Length: 215
Image (tube, rainbow, N blue to C red; front, side, top):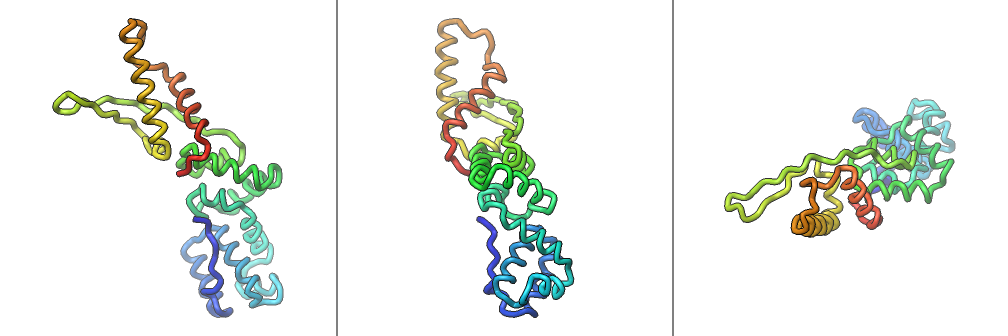
């Protein structure tokens, strides 16, 4: 999924100028534009970065800043679902974290964000930059009986974050149902559901045991 600009599609300066205008007109992210600049420098259409900046009628400092974003590890770009969220502001935060903790650690956090099922860019960035897991609220759960009343289904709001972990979730729920049946038989059930805090810890522990699961 990692964004890599195909410089072979740009055979000369005239085409490069057209592609550059298209990137800016469609609102391409600063990361994408940085990849384009880096690819054009590699083609050696211009003797220096400064001469390329003059050709595109942008400041040399802006070109340098955009190119610096291409240092962001591919694991981060993949976790975000592509380069679109990487603006200068976001890129500066990521580069600062990269400078403090190194590429290996930042890439590990990005993969962890994917394995935890983080869906929003803000949650992913929060984990990558601060190494802090996003706060998650336990969803409201409802049980619906089938028409023949022989089976039931669970309805959980905002279920998307569990999609990468359906196998673990199924195993977890099966174990909880066995525990519930046992406590019913012993008369030890004081509440029909597990306390929300305990359930949150159980889910977090279950996901932590499977760090390699990817979205």
